[in-house]
Image (cartoon, rainbow, N blue to C red; front, side, top):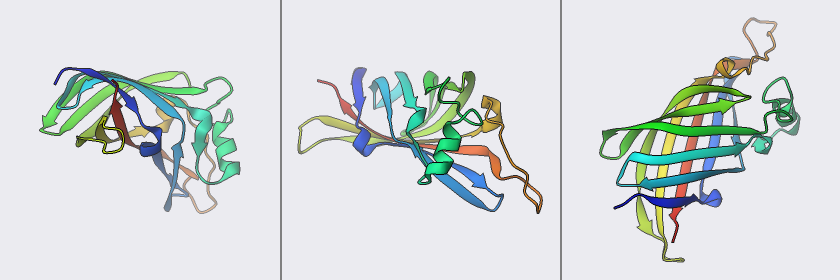
Length: 178
């Protein structure tokens, strides 16, 4: 199959994160508004062109006070850095449906290379629209301090409120453009 354009279906896609909270549990959240420009052959992603844009203001951890703190200058500084971006620079096939997808991740004006472990979940014809649909799952781990997200608070019992490592999980359903 030739490289074609795909559109992300936001209803069937997600961009989530997980970070240690108080050194004993995990806080989870998601970005609810994002889009991507994808040109790919799902059968062989190695020659794909992929760019993600995330509206950082759409952060949702199910706790409004925490979301507002994450939007503040202590963390994402949404007023000055409203977008988070990921632009793919290299894709290496590891197995039939598994890839290392490396790109430049920009958070809060700082850009660093990050590699996602991505699985191609398959493709089918949507029985409702007749359109071809493909699925992808991926994950990566970053150190938030590498991107200027350094705020923290010491705990009375030792340790800190927010862990440094953040796991990013992405689930994408993409529809082939006509």
